[in-house]
Length: 115
Image (tube, rainbow, N blue to C red; front, side, top):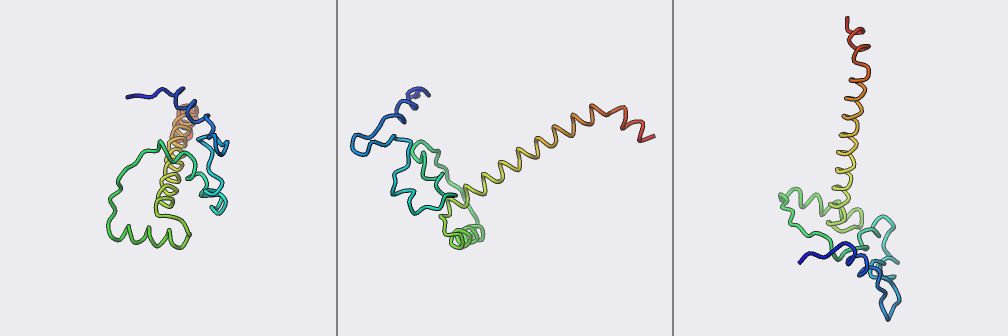
């Protein structure tokens, strides 16, 4: 069954009768001792997509070690790495688009410089 976007927004805007907070607001206990960089992982946990990531033994150990050193969960470190990758990939695509536009815009000048 597919739920409309409007229905999801209404559900998130409902307030808990006991605490008075909205469904999309993090619980105070969930964010008090959590570093600010990790707080985004406490919001919207329900409704996220679950997946299985198969790692080699070496990758799993490196991820476990990195998470331990940073005081974060392996999932948080993996999500952060994915976010960084997606930003870099978008930047690379934008750079390629701008380079192509510049090449088209200055094609005649580039041709004359090449002579």
